[in-house]
Amino acid sequence: MIGALLLALPQHEMSWAAFQDKLRGGWAGQMIGVSYGSVYEFQSCGAPILAPLREWKPEHLENAIQQDDLYVEMTFLKTLAAHGLDATWEQAGADFRDSRYPLWHANHAARVNLRAGIPAPQSGDREHNAHCDDIDFQIEADLFGLIAPGLPQAACALCDVFGRVMNYGDGLYGGRFVATMYTQAYLEPEPTPAAVRRCVEAGLAAIHPESAYAALLRDVLASFDAHPDDWLATWKAVEEQWGSRDSCPDGLDNPFNIDAKLNGAYIAMGLLYGGGDFARTLEITTRCGQDADCNPSNAAGVLGTIYGYSRIPAEYTSGIAALHGKKFSYTDYDFVALAVECERLARELLRREGGRVDESKGMLIIPEQAPRPPSQLEALGYSSEQIKAVEKEWALRVVPMERWSSGWKLITCGGAMDPGVRDCFGCKNVLVTHPVSRAEPAAFEKRELLPRNSPKLLLEVASHSDPPQADWELRVYVNGELLERRTIHSPGAFQRVELDLDRWAGQEVLLRLENAAGGAEDWAWEAAYWGQVQIL
Picture 1 (cartoon, rainbow, N blue to C red):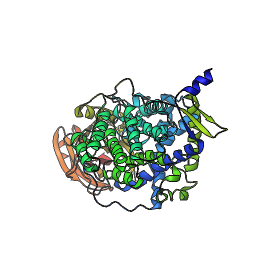
Picture 2: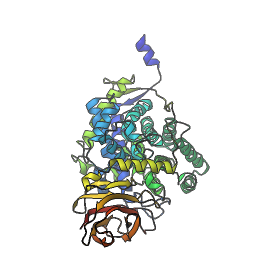
Picture 3: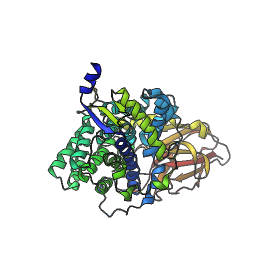
Picture 4: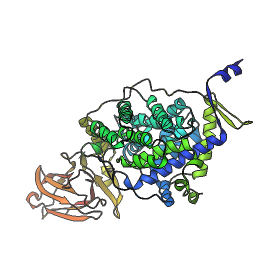
């Protein structure tokens, strides 16, 4: 009787071969999308890309091997392989903490927090992570949809564990949106305009309806309905209403926007206006700008899942064969091993959710699951001033001044450009700081008893090496009096600054060094690199 009741429940059927093809199509789509847009990442902020895009070549796919869009997901995959589908925040956080690859924004802040003893999920909360609304988990959540064919609730349950390691609020909703689109993509037999719209609407249904993310997606759908043949009209409407809403500290004073929801809107636009056409989807998602490699990676991944690997136009997949046996950076997986491990997890997840694989018929029996939003709205609505305060507190906590030079105390610092102490430009133990804002500099101080005979302050300082126009303003104070103010434009090479302290010979003084915003027109790349700071 129980078996008969289970069979009577709504369900979907899919051949195992079709599932394998769609799974590989999803991973291939991510690789194609990130490689397609890689040269445009943040090259156009607050403006669409209207110039001709570069011609696609199969060898571009090599770029995908070293992309964080892919290798971070595979850390999550490794956690699931080791600990199972019931992996905890603690286990997910530990594996992420121990990773050794470069990270940025919410990912970087979360890993710093984890290494400082702040566990998940607090590592992703606004209280500790000023980047928690950034795009990070959105570009990494594809995995959870790919191992949950037709199972949006199961995919989102995994998102709520792994996504909280580094994100919160709209940053977490972005992951739920993306993962749920993949689960729906498995159920779509053909890449039609109606199919991609169902994917977008399913993703919307998996996030809280009162969230800003949901409001933005509703705006995109409404504008698409009003202007179905004019993606620029929708782009302009989105930019006017949402383009300046970025809680990331790095985007508060410039058009740069790594906010999850704005970039999520571009994913939705690429899918809707692409209408199921692979080339058109890649093009439009990239042309929207901002994070123009991550967004086409998500969009092409969803579309690739609808297509299946075998039906993606061969011009895009032909470069994958050349990568056979080549592992994604920092991982144990090549393309084949990746798919095999995901197949194993999908089988297990399907059984947990009440489905099965009918081995005799080679079929997946998938119980019907509707997308479901979280019961509680995660949105703190911090002001830009509050965000900067969180970022300053974070930088003060994580920059190890004692490793750099004894006696100096960090007074204030922004969180952009990875502040800390590290090796760079051929030198060891370099202090990196960044202004809090255009108006507020980074600063550190030290009390020092100066020599009686001709004391001098010797500084070795540099500016960022790329772009070459990067600069910053050095300010030196003695007992609150400005001694020196000059622009430092020394890309990737330390220059020597020697200042006379004769007026204070034999006295105990308070020295203050500041890294203020430089003279570049755009507020970007303002990091200061401090080598030696000596009293002679």
